[in-house]
Length: 470
Ligand SMILES: C[S@@+](CC[C@H](N)C(=O)[O-])C[C@H]1O[C@@H](n2cnc3c(N)ncnc32)[C@H](O)[C@@H]1O
Image 1 (spheres, rainbow, N blue to C red):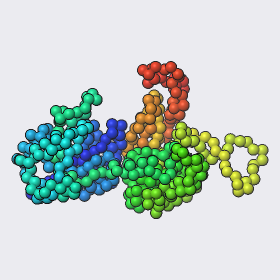
Image 2 (cartoon, rainbow, N blue to C red):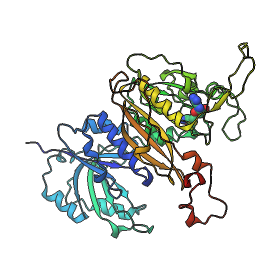
Image 3 (cartoon, rainbow, N blue to C red):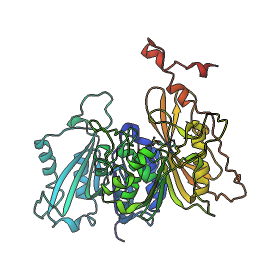
Image 4 (cartoon, rainbow, N blue to C red):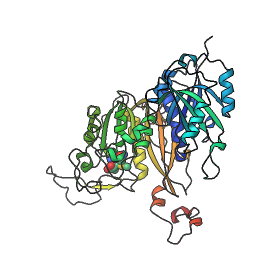
């Protein structure tokens, strides 16, 4: 019987992104039809940053390569050759274990490389000594080709998480893995879609890495129809279009959608005419992915309801009223006689309650997202008040798929909530009005009530705003 392959999926995890990484892997695994239990949190502690996956009916190299073609959490994919707690153990394994999987590469042009986990630097003499140490156990007979090798042999060294901040050295090595490099993940997209590289930029434009997480958590595919009802400069629509989905964005701000008014760019007074959603997409040669960009108040949106929703994914960052206004069309003025609109009227705007923003978003998604589609949005929370799954907005049509926290400061966080639409809006147990359980979110109370001046650093965490003490 032919030997089964094992692959190493090496991850790139920043400490505060652990839950984003795990959620992304599970979302992509689900897309590629790989059972998600292969990517459990427990199997991937921070000091490990990798998964070993054995070949079976569900796991194939093609599926893993496809995951890599999407993932920003995956650093690289390797076919495992040998591993062990020390170089000596790995060398012995090379000598003693069946080599039928690697033997076809012995005659190929090759190169060695080293990837370091939890160690920053390694001198060239140390690297060369380590490459040379395989001369007696790995019979590579092809030419060395550093530029374009047919077989790149990667040594992955893990030094373990340092207990203090002291730099790790050769003696701290805890595990060595040797494998054949297959492909990288998509971390290069973080630079490509960096805010500084985009045509349209606003004060609340979303960081590229988070946009890519959101896009992957929404499981967008080629041809998916993706909508952002609070699109601003369209950050998440850019990354969705990158994966070949068709995008529609809307926003209440006429200025943002039409590229009018003041620019958020340093040293630039007004927005340039191409700083629209379409212009931003064209900047990446993705203009053909733009279905439309519209000026709409999500509170009174004009979308026609059809039997089943027609968006494949709704990805958004609603306003929290901190850096951008949280408003809807309305008027607080009392008129004796109603105004006779002459076609030049621009409606007034009134404050949009934070809980209503999320309730409206879920009701909207209940009507317009297709069954099985994903709703992905940020939900701000105050960490000094009680928060957790029970306080997230809930709706009978939606099941929580993932929740990933990003700490904003000592007292506030925002949670990336990902819901799957599991019921049609016409299901018997879905309330026709699509009511949303949306509990009072204390985010704004805390955000706008900073600790009084002079509060000592050690007292800041314990400090509670007046309203929470009642
Ligand atoms: C956090 S920003 C979104 C930023 C966006 N993700 C980007 O990358 O530029 C929220 C956006 O919601 C818009 N907004 C506020 N109230 C709205 C409403 N009632 N309907 C639609 N959009 C609204 C604001 O104009 C703002 O552009």
